[in-house]
Length: 162
Image 1 (cartoon, one colour):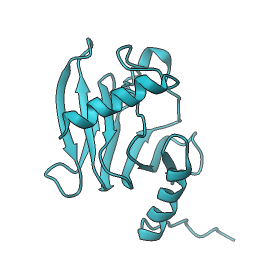
Image 2 (spheres, one colour):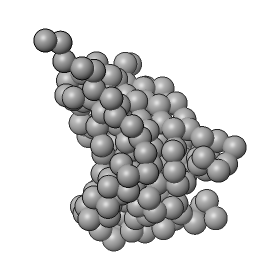
Image 3 (tube, helix red, strand yellow):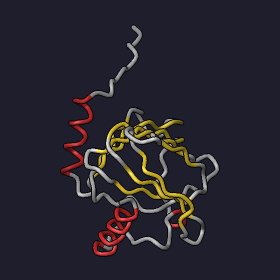
Image 4 (tube, helix red, strand yellow):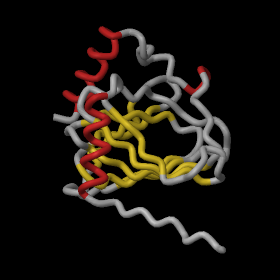
């Protein structure tokens, strides 16, 4: 007997459930994957985040590692950098603004700051999943374990969008 196709709806109940889990997470964010395995050729997920979540500036050097995101709820600031850490572009992305999402080509330095609790992004990335390697982390941003440096960096990013 053939299995029925899997259908998941992105509704308020799902967003609230994942937001609660994100709030309890040390990283203040939580993914909800629609792909059944990280080995799939396309990874589709919700990324639910709260203010204070640290998203290090990074890039994806592999030519097939672009990423696309649409903000379903909340607000983020997206920053594009040059190779020396200079800001090339800065945008507020929100369903309530004139910019709802972004598509970033491989090799572009980018970062994001969460500007509102319960922010939800729908993301699409090429699979299989590959963790970010050291050469893809920006040397001008603090390491994840540098608590004071991370707090200062996030505050500066937040202030740059006020």
